[in-house]
Amino acid sequence: EKEMVELFQTIPSEPGLWDSITLDAVGQSSGISIPVQLQPVAHANMARRNTVHVYEGELQAYDADVFAISGVVEYRDAAWNYEQPASLPDEYRPERISVLRDAQIRVSVPRASSFHPENHMRLPVCQRTDEPGRWVQPATLPFAAEAHGQPLYGGKVWLPYRCRLRSYTYSAFLQCLDDYRPFSPETTGKYTVHWFGDTNSRRALKKITSLGQWCSGIMASRPQCLCDDSGEAFPRFTGQNTVRDTLLELNDEDGGWSVRENGMVKNRGIQNSLAQVYYHRWEGLTQYNSGRWQDVFKPSALGLYPQANLVVISIGNMDVSFTQFLEYTRQLNELVVLLQSAYDEQHIVLRMPQYFCCRAPSGNPPRRMQKDRNRLYGDYARRLFELHFGSRLHVWDVSGIAETLPLEQRRDVAGCAVNTVPSEI
Image (cartoon, rainbow, N blue to C red):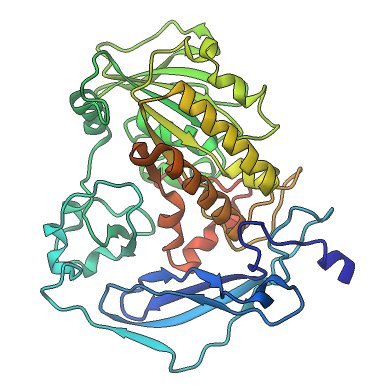
């Protein structure tokens, strides 16, 4: 057993992170959940396995409530990082953290504060896609939830702290692409997005091309809406593993349809399309792609499709599962070089890896997903892209939104082996 334990090692970017800990501050009245990100303290002993390990974290709370601390230790001795061992943990046995009974934090918010709910609708409209926030019960808001957007998950609505969101229909979203041409207003022609992504990207495009009808209403409880839609027939585009390259045309009345799949022209289209999406279905930067992922960015490949106004890159989910961290960093460096060559002016949207928690890895081959692995892979990509793309980068932080759900709702992921996002998110 000792030999097995010592096969587990920390990740180079966090050499002192031996233990995987989930810690939340939970509002006793509001139910608002605030994750506390713990970091190893700066001490030489933190690089050693067989010693006491100490972590610290900062809590930022902006809502009036009494917050209680709760949490679990998921893994010790770097067993959260499944890179080296030949076998993986087959059980998930978290240890509840003992917290002093009076370890509560009382937060008061002055009525004049911009963080007070009565002032939320006076906040500026959000300009970023990674604003921190919290999930709130609509009944507790001093304004109609419809003024901000419909509840998105578990009957709750997502409220950023420092800005407000504006609700768009799918039709209005597609019209916006044509009217405002985000990040390339001076260009002409049909607004074009190049989108490189995995199953979660396919699910997003199903929502967009169906104008929100896919997995809506009572259909949202179907298994393919909650988890895996890989076997589902979808008339608007194929999007399965056999089809890697798809060109979609979209407008605000008909949604979207594929007009080309794997180079084959489809005998259909839509009238007066407002925008188009070139979607490349990939398995991240891994060996499980149908060919070398690098070849997608060759001029001969991209030249088959209209020039991009915006680029969406979704990575991390497959990479966490099937690639060791150091190899992942090398692949990312290569991706950055290729993107800089192919897209020297376009803005880049980086979609972060999914949030993951609350179960051991599974699958064949095993998907080596884990809360801290997902976070560290995503953080590294974010820092690298910020360094090279600067103000052209926009981070689509799906993980940050999911991590602020109450723990019992985060545990929903345990029922989805492939860790895909529910359709409403």
